[in-house]
Image 1: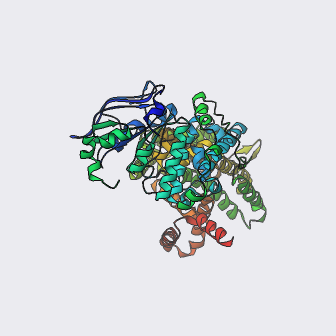
Image 2: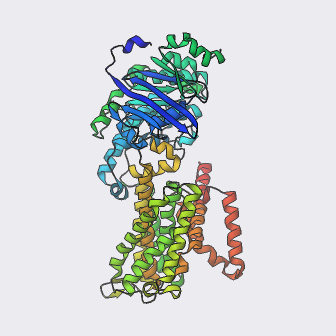
Length: 265
Length: 356
């Protein structure tokens, strides 16, 4: 997989311009600008403390930017609350899992259909037929998503009883259930075994092949180099380099700032 | 994990078309015409999980007025059912939505005084007092939740506790309306035409049906789209927000619904007891309700039934110990909460799994 395959990309799904975030006197992210093209996998890499998480939180709507613009498919979203950005097509997973451990595996994915659902509180209290038929459709769809990652057999188990790797897959499918146009993946391979990371990589590649745009923060260089069409390197919240995996790999600034410290990655 | 990877990597062709997922989202149809799932999905039940077992339990309780040895036992069952409503609605907030509230008795009081005052001071029938009480409890919870639900954890607990304290001051000081510390007298009982439901045996039927309706509504709610969204907040607020759930509004709605249910319990209490006074709705009962949620089983539908049973039965058992009652009660609670953090309902679940 390389940059050529998306040479004819239709446009930008995400555009970040002059984005900054200060915590007191410290600039966690300083004047960052980049784009994610429709159908692209873009990785953001950088040493610990480079500002990747802050950047992610600003795009997802968890942290407000100090300045700058975030545009999703032509619409400014930097002032939009997190839940509205989900309606606009941003799905995400977390570095530290945020699954609903007390709910069943299936329910976790069913909740992910929330942005597309209609039934409200009255429907909930009275258990009206319209809510039930909506729920049936959501369950079928959720089950199809679980099948996709081999978790259908565990559908009725408590989500907290899944293995760590399965919980990561569950969180990914839950994010997918929201119907995202851009998926933010925060270290999807972290904590996984080699086989687990390979499997995760396979799934993300499949999702991308289906047309989903992905913004990826990841320390697993094998995953980054294999999955990404384009890589953004940041350090101390600032831009260092941007380009295809090959270009980034050989960029002297990158080697100095990052890869040099991490030979075996 | 390695096992999953080794055995469950399907060929790419077997995947459901991903585009369907996104198209649905954009069109906002709510339709999910994914490729037919190879695995059959259980259809949502016509009746919510647990609603049927509630109906069975309530059906058994029909016998109460006939087998109870005296009216006192019936009055205890009435009180039990009122507290089932209270504890179950609080469980919705604490157990399912994960928000601590130390002001639930305040909403109970709002309902009791709303219904009681309308009856005693304005001569309004309790049949209108009951919905008015639901409105008072729900509106009270909404207004209090508006600022308080911006807070989390202990801060939320302190804020709700503070609001409860303010309500108690109002109940005490608005003497022309509430009767102040002496309590509100002259509350009329419910009446069916010429028949006043003024005995424990007759009013039992009203308490019985209202508590059943509330419990079914809660069972329905927990197993619905909105119910799943509020349970998601209880699981992880960040996770819920990442799925497009407006967590603040959802918490506020949950709070208001629970407040309305507490208001309903308050109306029943006022017209069963025919007298209300401020101490019933103070901070200490709020804390007791919280303890009963935990004791019964936090976030478990059956928990409040156990919690209310303990709340009503234990003081009766310990009556002979007079002053020692509170001490023994406290000690027993401590043991249960430390030994069985999942509560009585959790213990029952454990046994069931062990028997299988």
